Amino acid sequence: MVRVLTYGTFDLLHYGHINLLKRAKELGDYLIVALSTDDFNELKGKRAFHDYETRKIMLEAVRYVDLVIPEKKWEQKIDDINTYKVDICVMGSDWKNSDKFDYLKDYCELKFLDRTEGISTTKIKEELGSD
Ligand code: C2G
Image: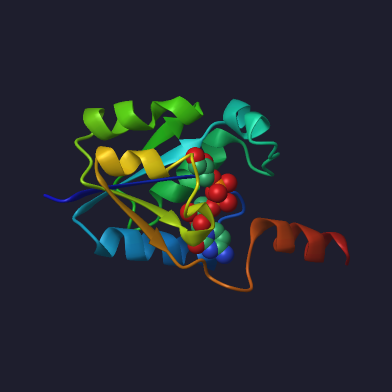
């Protein structure tokens, strides 16, 4: 049972997120998503349109997702890897060479998948806002 873990806000769930989740699941058998809480989003300087509970419900409805846990702080990742016996941590390529993830390679396999071009939550908000 290969267990995969990824992190994110996943606000206004879109096909870029789905494409990431699909490819992450394809790397193993069980996909855990650590979903940024509203408080942690504030720490990240992000204000999500949907609150944590709504974003969690939406993610749990995605066929590739097996478990959603809260991402409350930057420092929880090693505990997450140990608690959930994670084999592979996967993130989009925008996190490559980041001090937020690189150290995890001592605890599990670390993989970065190409971001899906042309879509982002910010783009959606901007284009909707401009109507
Ligand atoms: N993503 C992607 N393609 C896009 C948009 C997002 O592959 N067009 C990926 C991101 O690279 C990330 C995941 O989808 O791996 C979730 O994206 P966000 O919700 O923006 O997550 P982020 O704010 O980067 O949070 O501790 C890490 C952070 O919680 C990551």
